[in-house]
Image (cartoon, rainbow, N blue to C red; front, top):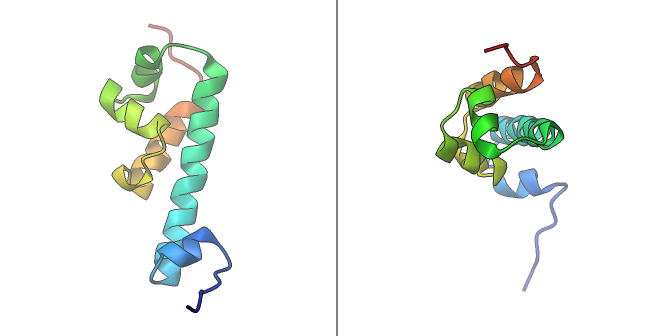
Length: 88
């Protein structure tokens, strides 16, 4: 049995360089969003409100379900995660 050797996990998963770049960008954003939410130290329901997401969508995000989020969506969520909370 011959095993293929890949430079990264994304190289193994992606069929094209563009797809690999998209996966890397999405995973990086997801990581930063999750770190921000952890730093907040607030309940998931409150984090969902701050991110502008539903609770189930926030659950998917925090569980790392990358396939459920487009690059565009993650950019928008990251902007919410790095903005100061609005006074309500």
